[in-house]
Amino acid sequence: MSTVTLIGTRLAESGQEFVYRGSSPSCDGCPYQNQCLNLDEDIKYRVVDTRDNAQTLECQVHDQGVRAVEVEPAPIRANIYAKNAYAGSRVQLPGSCPYTECPSHQYCEPEAGSFDRDYKISEIIGDPPHEDCRIDRDLTLALLPSDE
Image (cartoon, rainbow, N blue to C red; front, side):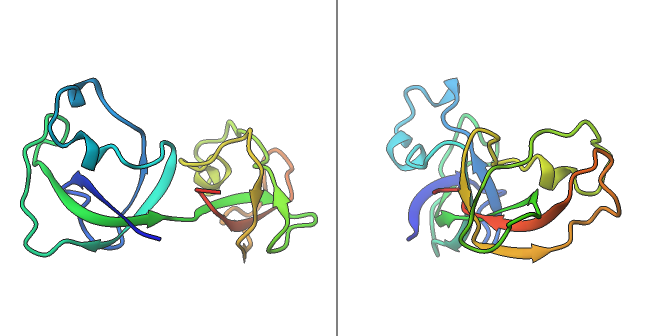
C-alpha cells in the first residue's frame, strides 16, 4: 500500500529508494510537517510514483526543496545464514562484520536492517557477491521486508 509524502526533489524519481530517518531539528515549525513526517522511522521506502505538476516547496533540510510522491516499503537485500534459509522462514541478521572492503559488506550490514529483529524471508536470491567469507559464515543473499 502506498503513502503520499514529501521528499527532497533529488530523490523524487520513480524507483529511488531511501531509508526514512525521521525529523530534523530544522523541521520544527515547518508548515509541511504533517505531509513530510508521515513515514515510519528506519524503514526502507521506494518511490513508486511522482505527482505530476506537483509544486516544489521550500525546505530547510533539502536544499532544492521537496515534492509530493507516493512511496511504499521496499525490501532489504541482506546476507543471512544459509542453513535452513527458505522463503517464509524467520531469521535474524548474522551480525556486524569488520571487513568493510568486502563486496558483501553492504548486505551483511544493510542500511535499514537491525541485528535485534526477526525477519520473515520474502525470497532467496542466491549466492552473496563475495568468494569466501573472511569470518567463516555460510551465507546466502535474501530479500527481507523492511516494514514487518
